[in-house]
Length: 163
Image (tube, rainbow, N blue to C red; front, top):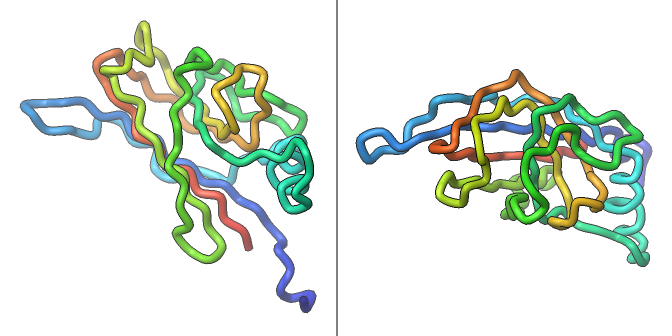
């Protein structure tokens, strides 16, 4: 591999849309737009990238997304500040490659699943391997908070771009 072909950056960009049903139609009532770049945490690099490339024990892949009311994670974080979902309420993601250097994860938190017990000001997002609360965060991001009520849905798009 030539030096010019090295991966130099891993950037994550997330989008959180809050929707609700109005007269039988899903209407967007809050939209963060794509925000980033995110913070890939130290153990995220280790578990999700280094160990996965080496097929080592303890390697992980992204399977779930969580929302929270806290700030963006720092490099040493292992969890998401202010995570609002119980471990069983993390959203399972659908993963796909949308370009040769971009992985995209999507999920929906439906109000019918009662993911919120009361209105909350959502302000951060994180990617995880499992629903276990002790699971290690891969990466996370923050955005301008939006109030989400119990009758609203949340649609997530999170892209990890390599350049």
